[in-house]
Length: 435
Image (tube, rainbow, N blue to C red; front, side, top):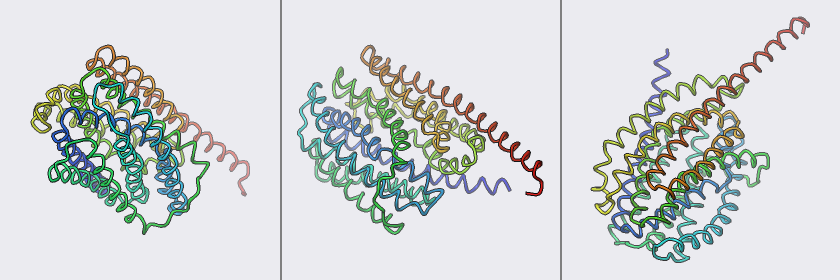
């Protein structure tokens, strides 16, 4: 009987990981096309702006996608209100982020030694990579909330393929070679795919527009974790841009994107388990702890295999992205081990979120990422890039230790509370046997 349960889970994981792997491969091909077409200087600018939009997209919507995934998986009838809640917050926060980002990036890029970037180019990149990307990600979340993993997989792969097709058409067919030209193509491609995504989810129901005040605080706590993680993951790119040539920024940016793609094997596991962890922990966090432990073992194995593969394949990467990115192999090899550490803390962090303990999850991730951002900035300033690598490993190692210690403590407390409740019910029944 056990094998019957394992096979569907294995098939689901293979489909999920296969879709994310296809998406990762498509993203790498897209990066390779852009790296060759734009050249080290323009591509370095693209990497810096993308680092800023990666941070901003996590704040766009104020984490409303979590309540949609969490509540719709339990109560499908709540979908209309939660979808409207998401769309309103994306529109409001997206407009604010575009305005603030335009002013902030204009000033920041003037500090670097690279060429200037005009306002229209920045505006297109901000709108295309913040608002439109958040809407596209919402489509995947909707499908996951309804348990439609095959459609979620198609949405992920489709977006990656659409970006690759846009890059190939722009750079190879129309000979796009500047950041300004690519910004227009990228924004148009994202707009087209967001429109297609809206058509996909339309049969599931129309949104009911209203901001759900009770979900604002959990959503902000949820998004803050990813904002701080994105800041921590991208502050090194922004700092290196102040002290190193844009060609080095380009090489380091490609390396970070390659290693980030390595996390997708773990993300594939987590995206399948999150809704299940939410259901398992409904009557107490301790009920989902065995599943989290199994996820830890699987994630460590996936992380080790992925990290080793990245380390072995690193020398071949400059031939794909261009010989002018000579530092790429060194950067990838130094970063490859972080995949294992991310796998080690992902299961614990996901269970905290799925069980509704976004406050605890936020304190762990935000604290580590806030202190980590400072550590990375200082280490990069003092001894880039080796200092940057040391700081990255220290931060992820600290998250592993703290996340599991806190989770085990909360699981023990949940178990004790459940036992006390059972004893109280039993004593009440004995005292009143006729009830």
